[in-house]
Length: 329
Image 1 (cartoon, rainbow, N blue to C red):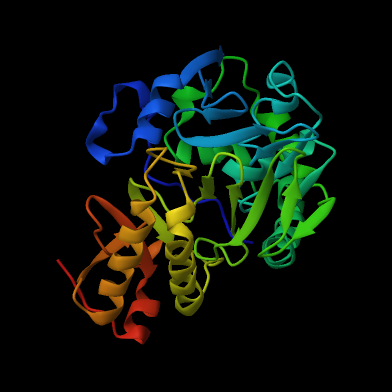
Image 2: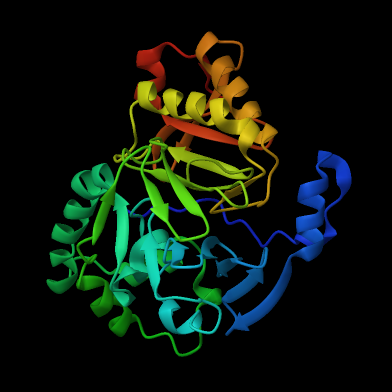
């Protein structure tokens, strides 16, 4: 099983307070439109990004995205599962919600059990979902306590006052529901008046996918990238270096048609040039012009490459085998 491993905590990005410095009129107009419309207890904020797209931010840490089409509503990732999002979102979803997972880590899929329709990539389910469900036996025999991840990630103060660890653990012990649909790169999800294109983005996990909305031009990337903290590309469930470099080449190749980039963590609504910048920095890692720094991290010995206060953290053995430059400080 690939364990849940925390990102550096990313607090809510106030869209309205940002400026023209990115040079994008479309992004600026969206930021003016964007507004917080609902707050559920202390740990959930719902922000309307457009007439049909909503961001659901959980505990100031991870975001899911609801997209309403004329025939279907899709929720990209289901969060920690602390609250039942099918209830939380019933007043703003225009149709029965189908979950579309970027990957199966607990902050993205623990809420899947509240829904009857779920999808993820075939690779993610076969490589990680089945293993995750097998590992839930450890909850039942008392050797694994899923609720402990909130103390591990220093988020206990964000939990609702009535949070019950025993009830939560029993819910997670049921495992992920078998997906009603498995997808691959190049597939489309038809919402009626818009489509979501599936883009394979293996990096953080081998089966990670991103979703490109045809109507808005927004890319929802899960944990493939972020403009904050450490990108955990060092986990047991990580893609190979060859696969992940292809991911950033793929994203760069489609960047010009993207009007806004939405990671699950950290700053949102980034310009398409962010994907081009990532691609350039990854090339610098490969050609040795960007030097990494060795880190003793709770996820294991790793090497961090600084892209400007954020960036990828690779497993140290991957870096050594590839011959990338790094120093030990």
